[in-house]
Amino acid sequence: MSKRAVLVAIALVSVGIVFGAVLVSSFSGASLSFADSNPAFRSDVPFTPSADAASLNETFSNVSDIVTPQVVYIAVKTRAQNPHQFFWPFQRPEQEEDDERYSTGTGSGIILTADGYILTNRHVIENAVEEGITVKLNDNREFDARLIGEDANTDIAVVKIDAENLTPASLGNSDDIRVGEWVLAVGNPLGWTSTVTAGIVSAISRNIGILRDRDGFGIENFIQTDAAINPGNSGGALVNLQGQVIGVNTAIAGSMQGTYLGFAVPINLAKVVANALIRDGKFVRGYIGVRITDIDAKKAEALGMDVFKGVLVESLVEDGAGKAAGIQVGDAIVEVDGKPVESANQLQARVGMKHPGESVALRIWRDGKYITKSVTLKGQDGEESVASVEDKADEKKDEIMEPVNFEQAGFVVKPLTSQIRSRFDRKTGVYIDQVKRNGKAAEAGLRPGVVLFEAIRKGERTPINSVSDFKAFAKALGKDESVLLRVQREDGETMFVPMKAPIE
Image 1: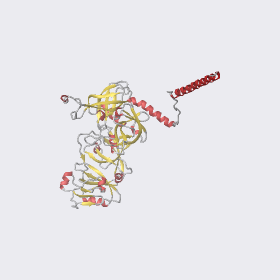
Image 2 (image 1 turned 90 degrees about the vertical axis):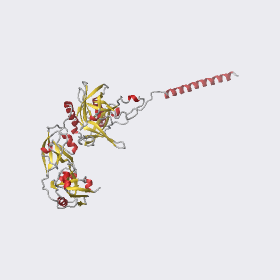
Image 3 (image 1 turned 45 degrees about the horizontal axis):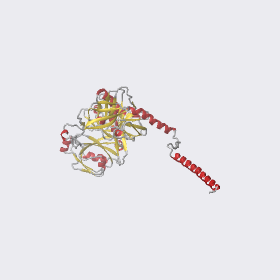
Image 4 (image 1 turned 60 degrees about the vertical axis):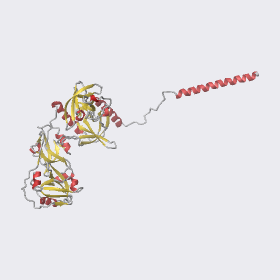
């Protein structure tokens, strides 16, 4: 090989080595770039919320920080129902008769005092075995708790732990809440501690029919909210944006589609009951001694009222406070102690916060005008009998002896026989013998097997002593005029049935 060829070969090799080194360096640099463990992700702010939105967000966080430590986790040990009904794996048969089966439920509670009184629902601690209530604080400390007292009519209970320097919750005024305002629900749903959800007050003064004693009495004046509430939230706090407790989360209602609403006992009612439980171990409630029903437009028109709200007195308890104060059947109660009453459960809640011996001022619509009656409440004495209004009309033989069909309203009446008079302990009236299914009377709530003995039209009462009396009353009614028909059941209870003319 010539010298020139050798030099050319060396030059080519040299260029190749340099070019290869450049390629390797470039590739190595690319590999290091892709393998970088700290890429630069985007972190700019695409949108700045308004000051109001930012303020609301900050409020939610601040209220949550304040209230969460004031709500506790409650575990309750109860005896299992029918413990030997099922087979328990890995259990020796000879032990079944000696072993007791237990189950554990959980709920929430609200710290009331620095020395350990805690507010919760009665159904949270109901049926707890001895030493079966445990309270866990937000800081994870655990205490055995003892039951101080419970009230079935409001589903409120108080337990006590031996602790000091706790931070009690601030209790607000539930009378001031408004539909649409923001609230937070704080509790321990499904066993998950210290959970906060947000929503609004969606309704007030709700009656959902879950609190009833053996006499059918219960005080339900719930705050309704769409803040998420689940099992385990019971006894927890419903709070406003000032960090005040306005309700005790108590119940949920849902649909097949998974839409749920929560219901809370108003704190004004709960704290009155709790105070009595702490002081006396029980709550002794005062009663007016009346049976009432809501007033709707038909009833209000029949009574000649200028408002379509309030409660109608349907019957009085013998020797009750209402009767002693001069309350009458057919009275429409529209206020208690100066506060409007729009429903029966609202009246029960207002009166149910008072004790026997205390007085309430009732504003009543009677005979076309408003009057005020002061009622000194009495306690509930076991079995109570309902008094019917005395029949002052002289007993007279009914001129019409055959049943009469009021076809347009859809019911049949007949005169009282001696047997019916004896069964109902009444001398006058007409017996509702038949009620047409899906007729106007049936839709109004009239049922067969009762005695109709009084009617109210434009606030005026008309005794119905006979079939003739009722025919005359029905004939005199104007078109679409609303009336109240007062009837008595065989057990002595009386009630009003609203109906519109024509009735004949």
